[in-house]
Image (cartoon, rainbow, N blue to C red; front, side, top):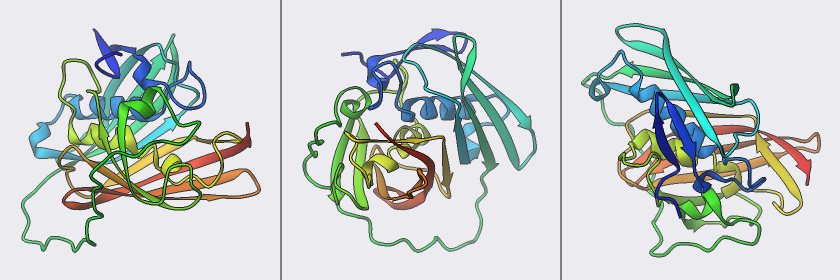
Length: 258
């Protein structure tokens, strides 16, 4: 098995490993790893000191299947400012854009404001959870899953704690933002309302809002999915770390028979 989701090739190029493989096609990635790669590019895009700025929103537009292949990642500040900046990231494969991402970066400040109240943090189970048939290999095996409520593959809302088993990029520590983006796209899987063996539920985008810096290696998804007979759907997630709530995630879904 590879040691990371991506191997760096230099000049913004990355070789995708088998850890990125999603549940729909062995030649296509789960959207979590490329979303995290886009977040990495937004963090590292010149123009700010990362210690003084926070990424508060990321939207990833998924233009098509992201192949398990070499990716080219470019980023630029498209709206500069002393307090907020908008970074645009393009991920391309074989010269074709497969994901566009926009991230807002905000300068942080020490203000005399009370910390927001947070509901009790869901318990972290002592052991990992086995995934049901149809949920295996690639990305799903590269993440540790611990179900606190509900179950993956069981219809209805669910709460799962997640932890990456591997670095995003070989030789690099995973940033807190990258940890969140790597799993936020799994809200629709954690809270699936339909059987993965019979139905496709593919998202066209992922939007994550963060109201504070994530902390630690565990990211929690308190997720729910809504599906409609029209073939449309929505998955939403409350995002947690072990300190409490940290943001929200949402995915617009296309529902089709397999």
